[in-house]
Image (cartoon, rainbow, N blue to C red):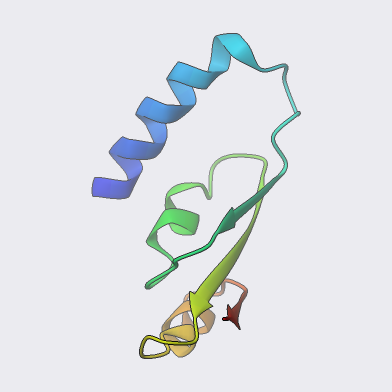
Length: 73
């Protein structure tokens, strides 16, 4: 719910500044459990969840939620 509120606020702030269908690819560079991507599920975007290599991997949780992700250093 926290990410849902943040996404809606951010989306409403951006709406007057961007044209429709210009935001398509979003990268979450410090994904934890994919909550940010889940909050964007109603938007017409593609989200890549990236988990840093120097923290415990949460990719299994991300994958179990039906999302995509990778690790990066």
